[in-house]
Image 1 (cartoon, protein in one colour):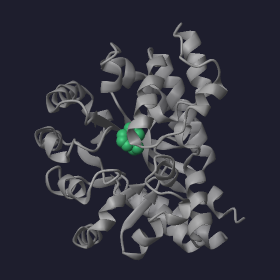
Image 2 (spheres, rainbow, N blue to C red; image 1 turned 90 degrees about the horizontal axis):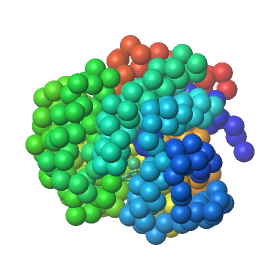
Image 3 (tube, protein in one colour; image 1 turned 45 degrees about the vertical axis):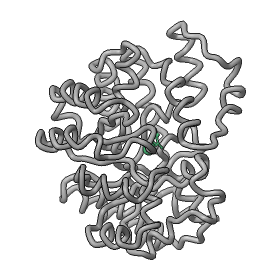
Length: 334
Ligand code: ADE
Ligand code: ZN
């Protein structure tokens, strides 16, 4: 198999830091924090990672994050992700975190933020991986709860680039959070939202029109609506696609049925990402290789995806240009 993917410079734009909590670390943190997990072993936990849908996964994801209590826990989690990402040729990462998953358990917003932030700074020094942080609101909770979380985040504005929307999609349309996103955008935050992962095309329209997002996370079900595909293509709206996540959560039955290539052929700006790598069986290069193998993507198509990842990032245009030049140099050296 071609090793084109491994050295290809890339950005990762859809990664939930709590979803990078590997079972081994979960057990180590449980021990460090004197927490009892409802599993006897790492193997028993991994064996439980069989999901029929998004909610099956989310139930275990929220249970898993219960071991994250202290600043060091968030630090260790984040630095481990960055090391793994660096090994995959990731030069820049835009990382989601779910503060309400922690504040709801009595862990202070500042504890979560400081641990992640310090690891991002150290990771950039140690590994040369730059990063930005995106605060996600849990859409199964109320808009009032999201607004209160946004108010807490105002003090950290310089260190949090944007806001996002995740958790249970169906039944929680983007319109529920219009006021929160308006206030966030007015305060200078960029905006993204999970949409069309399980939810209908109307939720992708909602993310575009009601929330005025800069990127759509997933977006798979947009393909059901030709007018929506045209709109996304025309606006060059990036989609952060997560192939192994889609497979593990039942969005596609086999990787050969994955819509990534169709999206590209319809002119959409797609990127490839890992979502929750500890739960879905692979980091970003595993995702690139999965679509390379199953869909027969050429090196030129893979390079296109890597270029899209930098173009769709929240980096400034000079930094984007430098990364794009690195992709070109890599392609030309091949
Ligand atoms: N939270 C973590 N991963 C998620 C996903 N794939 N969809 C929605 N919420 C999430
Ligand atoms: Zn996600």
